[in-house]
Length: 197
Image 1 (cartoon, rainbow, N blue to C red):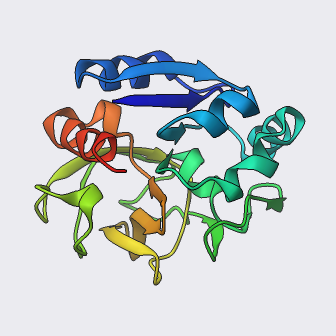
Image 2: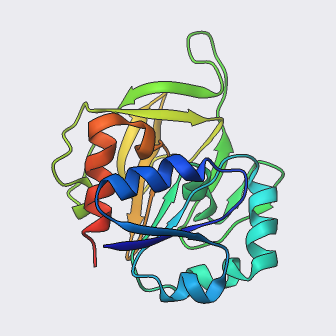
């Protein structure tokens, strides 16, 4: 099992790399478009602002490459959001691989922003990425922007309304939560990703 983690800058790449290596994967971190294109599996992590991340991806040529990839691709947290058309964070044009926009969460009493901590998945659809994961399992979230549940949502989480927790279409998947910080359930999801062809 091999995977390349895209060096999108500002992300906690080491914990993700260690999580995948614990599952037996050979993992490298790269911003080289050629290495990413040749990888059997690609992970797009992200922490920080959408505008900064997209600028780095465009500068390295990875933004132009990503939509054309045919191997399994997993976006994590901001990386998932970048798969969509645009983000309200600085009105940023994103990769446009998945339909929809990323909006800022609205803070209300009892639901602060960022949405930070453990929350339960609901509304799971059948998908190989979610094999062995049950409704109600907890995953770890840290985010201030989110995608409304839509036709590409494979599982959602309730934070005042249904927001996308797992998305997917074709060979592209994304998780709003951090599977590398989500204990056994997160490890199961990463293992499922490593098993995708």
